[in-house]
Image (cartoon, rainbow, N blue to C red; front, side):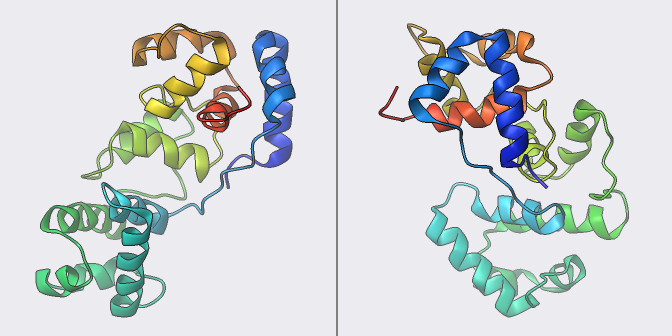
Length: 205
């Protein structure tokens, strides 16, 4: 499971000792709510379904998939459907390719989501073997589903914008700069990421 409220509080308090601007920001905006998703194949499939469409559209496609494949949306059931059946659920040709890549890796036993490597970079390398799952999606999965405490999605624009507000920077930092600035925050960068999302667009900052 993802980082709990208790873990977020602990890690953000630790970050406040390292970087006082965390403490100042927490006073103004409070602690963020946990962001927790289930572990496993369904969460990654839902990530694929949700790419480049609205939340409402993704939810509609998901409901159609549940209607076609059953509530569990088992990978073998998806693989058994032809193009037209999945197209009727709202999956484009590209997303069908991504979904099949995920299902094939899972059913072949090449991707065991219950036993990803403990090393974060090794786990990311495993996840990006899935077509349509890039580094950002892999990092979000490891942070929100597995609750890995040092994941830092430096390429996320909202993380960069939140960091700009949090640290009072003159401009939004680049991915490289975002990564560099967070080095002293190890091993609590997961809480830092969730807090930057909490700060992003927050009128109190």
